[in-house]
Length: 226
Length: 360
Image (cartoon, rainbow over all chains, first blue to last red; front, side):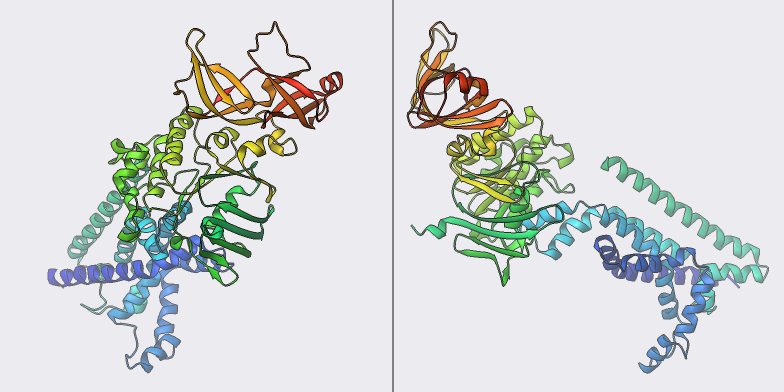
C-alpha cells in the first residue's frame, strides 16, 4: 500500500459521488415534484420506499441489489440481454447501488422546498403568460434553490460516506470500486494505521466542513426568509 | 356595433364541496364591472373560472369574439389575454420590482404591447421602488406593483380580486386613487371583485350581485343600490348613489353645492371645480321623512320626494324607496314611523338628508 493507492481511492470516490449526485438531481427532481403535489394514494408507499435506505442496514440494501443485478436476477438478465454483462463489481454497478442508497437525501430536501412554495405564485406566473415548464424553471426552481443546495451537498456527502453497500455490490477493485471508506478498512486490516489515519482525517475534515457550510447557509436563508 | 364583440358571456355550472355555482351572465367589455356579494357567494370563484385558474365541469365562456371555454375547448390561463391582480399581490419574492414587472411583459409578443413599462410605472407611481425586493415593500406598494405587473402584459381584460381587502384603511385610501386613475385613463375593461360597498360605489360602472353561487341582480350601480328588494338595501351601509354636477361653492359657510335631477344638495366644501361630474352617496340611515317641509331644523338638505316602495329590513325597521325627480334614494325608518306617517307607495313626502358623501 502507498499514498498512490490512497490518491486513487480519493479520485474514485470523488468521481463516484459526482456522477451519483448529478444523476440523483435529474432523477430526484421529478420524483420530489410529484411527491410535493400529488394527492394520489400512491404517495405514502412511494415516500416509504424512497426513505427506506435511511433506516435499512446498508448490507440489506446491498444484498438485494447484488441479487437483482447478478446473473440470475431480473436486472442482471436485462443487462446481459443487452450484451453489457452484469453490474456487480463494476463502477457502473456501484453508481446504480449508490443511486438507491442516497436517493432520500436528495429527494427529501427538494420535496420540502417544492411543498413550501406558495402555489399562488405559479398561478400568478400563469396569468403572466408563462407556460407550465416556464413556470417551473423561472418560479419553482429559483424558489426551491436552498432545497437543491441541501440536496446536492447531502447527496454528495452521503455517497462519499457509504461503505456497506459498496462492499456488497462493488467489492474491492482498485481504481474501479475501491472507494475511500473501503481503502481505510483495508489499511486497518493490514495494520497500516498511518495510512488509515491519513484517509480517515481527510474524510472527517471533508464531512465536517461540508455540514458546517450547509448549516451556515441554511441559517442565512432562514434569517432572510423571515 | 356588434353587441357580442363587446361583451363577455359566461355560463358556469360546477359543484364545489361547500357550495355550487350556477351563473349565466353577460357583462359589458368596457368600464368597471363589480362582482359584489358576501364571503362565500362565489365571486372569486367566478373570477378564477374566467381566468381559467379553475375549470368548471360545465362551462361556456366567450370574451368578445374569442371562445375561451366551451364543451370541446379549454384555453389554458397562460393563453388568455388577461391581467389578474390577486388579493395577496403574489409578487415573485426572488425578483425585484423591475423584474416582476418585466416577467409578463417579456412573455407577450412585441406587436401585442400597447403600454410601455414606463407608462405603467408612471400610472401606479412606483418609479422609486424599481430596485426593491417585494419583502421590502409595504402592503399598499405591493398591491400597486401587482396592478402594474398585470397591466404590463397589455391585457384585453383586467381581473381584480379584492385588491384592497388585505389592506388597512390608510393603505386602502393610498391605493384607491390609483384604481380610479386606471378607470379614467385606460380603455381596458375591468372585472372587480369586492365585498366593500364603498369601493363599488366609487369605482363601478356596472354591478353584478352574487349570493350563494347565483346571480341575484345585474345592472347600473345606482339602480341596484336603490332597490329595496335586494340584499344591498339591508345592511347598515345601504344607501343611494347619485350622479351629480358641482354647481357652486359657498365660501362664507364653506359649503359646496351639487345639482342632480332631484334638486340641489349642500355638503362640506370640496376641492372640485364647478361643472365637474361627481358621484354622491346618501346612506339610507341618514335620510328621514316628513309629510310637510320642516322649518326650524339644522338639516339643510330637504327635498320633495315620492314614496315608491317599502320593504322590511329587520324587526321594526323598514327601508323606503324614494323618487327624487327621477333619482332613486333610500330612507331607513321604523315600522312605527311607517304607520304614523301612513307611508305607502305614491305618497308625497319630504326627504331630510343629514349626510352626503362625495365619492370623486
